[in-house]
Length: 604
Image (cartoon, rainbow, N blue to C red; front, side, top):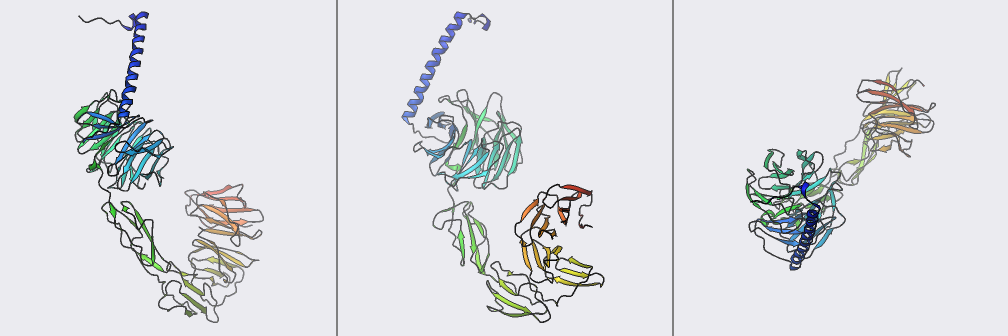
């Protein structure tokens, strides 16, 4: 006959006191036994062999080795603060793990423990065994970082992520995959250099963790929920459910050979599942309760998972050039990048950047440096070549040629041209137009792409003031100073009223429209592409931004007596705007729906 047990409501005070004493005594015995067991285990420094499949486990206080088939487990490293992930480099004989705010390393037998990184929040880590790099995620600072295996050359690969957790690499494909936690968690992929980032899969479980690869079939396995394992290919296709079961809380996940291993988070009551990754069937299930702590990280330890390091042959510097970025007397591992440049007077052909690939072959083509030559100079009409300081047919780097204009014409442009190191001639092309004509009022200055023209309106005559320009799109003047200003492609230039003494006022600036403030000797211009209005003096000094982040500023006009400027801002709804010359009191004067509105003037 089964004994009857009192319900919660029928337990007496005496019963409760007895139970409390029994529970207290049991707790003391259990804690002392556990402490004694762990101390003895640590002092013995057990160095057992671990047959394949051998699993390395991070479970808070230990890095453990689990000989799965023999159902035996032993500590590799003990007395840790909070170990949450683990990985290894087989040929180097290293184990790496995240331990609270540090990343540590030891030999495979747990000796020679070294702190690789201190004061770093590490959640997941992965070893790139080819180029000897260590990648890790910073869940709290939202980064993915990388350094070499000794902790040097640390850099940020990604920042401002949502919540990067577990990470895994495929060095042969040059790829990394990681879980980014959030309200909508994601599996993401990029190159090992942080380029070509894409989202592979999304799911709505915010605490997703655990990711591994079948590198041969190019498949990703990850825990999209606490009890659900899914897979997808590297391209983000063929997503499917592999395994799901109630009553488990998976945390670690690893792939080896043709098996998928998943660890239940709770070590004391948990277990390790060996699954068929194709159909999700459980091949076996091992429950081990020897060590206190939750399972946070899991990786299969096997030489077959890490191919030998690959090196490329040394690349010699090109003749008349320089190699940099890669050593000439050290092994050049996969991922090493060599760059090449040519000396002044030489131009390169081939691949200027070459990368050591996974097959030990350099990417790209051999880089060579050839003698640089400038194109043959053509004589302008009414122009004469005086001579060059080298063979006139060679035109190599630093060749200097001199020109002059015939009587009755004037020189516009450079009378001395020098072959520059980029294979182009320095200085604007020379033009020798006939002497200037007078222009009676009303005289109109016209910006006509390759020229600035003067139009004598009543006499219906026109003549060039400045020629051989790149793309003159606006013009203005200062009468008393005798200056003409114009926008010329990416520069603002100035000349005398007769087109002589051409000077670049601003270089490498986006200019669409300009206007001269003749009282205070200031030059205003609009930058259509960089969305600005800027100002400087007439010599190009004291440049500053008046407005930025405009819609599409084009033409501009000033009223210095009123202290005002007006301009057109292009957009879906174009506007005429006004402000003071100092950029204050900005208002919209008119709006219109002509997208390409241009042209503005004043009746002052």
